[in-house]
Length: 56
Length: 530
Image 1 (cartoon, rainbow over the protein chains, first blue to last red):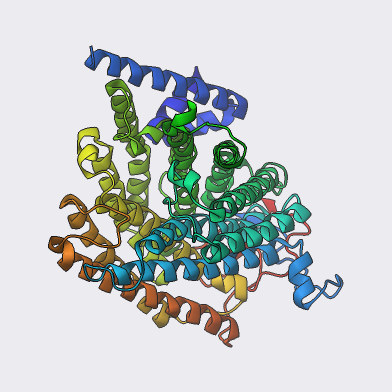
Image 2: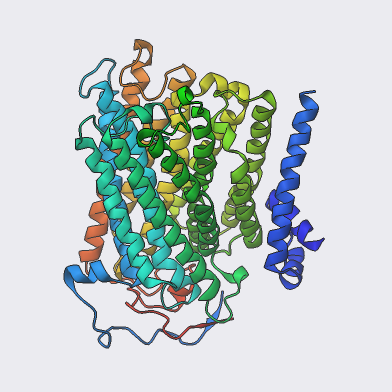
């Protein structure tokens, strides 16, 4: 869950220093990469959903 | 970043290591600095080669009508100019910087695979020869545009096969280079140099290397299909045989869009090194920058369709790519804000590297915004294939990638050569470049909005005025690059010794731990980073 939170903020491109320090301690690269790929998929599906909604 | 012991690398000279001199040194070298130097000189040579082509294009477009070149040759010029600048100048220049800087910035003795490093470089030379030599074969050089779209590419002569082979070789070289860079960064960091302590240039190259590995095989696959369509009777892209030329566009741009980020991410890294050094403040939001770079890399894979809005996609497809493209502007915008925040209330000085970096931020942002304009599908349908697009990508690639290459070159020349470059000449180079560049490319926005198509040697009379200005600007920009060449050579030959750290605010390992010039072998004993 922490990894997903970090990835979410990375899509926005901003991370609080204190939160980042927590990330640096608790997250493993594997978890971040996995969360990143899953989030990318969710991101694509979300845009796709919006597109479906507006073209209905 | 602070680091302890040894205060200076002990190997100030390399008497103990006999290595070949003269031509053999450069042919057989496995030293990351030598290979970096080779890449940088090669890139500069290709930059001037592609630049001559650009000036021929602008000379022809100075006035309406055909003056200097015939239309076929004009098409070859636009095609090979693009290929040479992308694959021959910008990309090798970044690999050159990667070779020089990554080992020094992470405290490694050399790249992880030095022999493969040598091979990566010497592969790009025959590829460049193939590209340039294709002008002299029957039928002339590839004339399809750098995107190599079928069916044009299937109809031309042997030069296309030479171009395809060149692209294959360059792709192989890039993949090897990327494997080398990733392995070096992940395995050879000095004790204490954790991932999140790495300079941003190293981070951006790590992510760029992954992008290269992901997309270069895609391009190789696409051009192999072109080759078999041409010679082995397949019909991947030939509608007459049941194929589809649109498929090539999808495959090409699945490579092509991440390629844009391959050229620009290392630029972000360089600017993120230079702005803090000359603002004398740490980079604002380092972690955000790393995160934003990673997310830009991931998003770069899902926006390729914005190059193809007029090709014919379902409305849902067009909308998807429009939304996705607009969203990629968010992490990019965050970076621009971070650089501005780094400068905010800093003790800034404006030496040449800083000038080029600030020029980068201002002009790259203009290129980014015109990109957003183009991302709007209905707008793109009107201005697709016009000079507006040409203006947009030159703002991204010339004032983006190229300006940051100049910034990096001036910034690290003292470390590379041990000498100081001529500051006044550097500033003159910057101002002539920035003025010439804007005169050349800003009017192209007007031309595009007025409907002037790209890739044509002649045009209607109403476009004459701004084309004249654009050509004048291009010649100012082109010739002022000779100042850079002169400045580099003069710097190497001069007697102005550079200090180990001539920049007050530079704090990465190559400045704090190594003398200028950096010794042939550095960090044989890894420094300990605290």
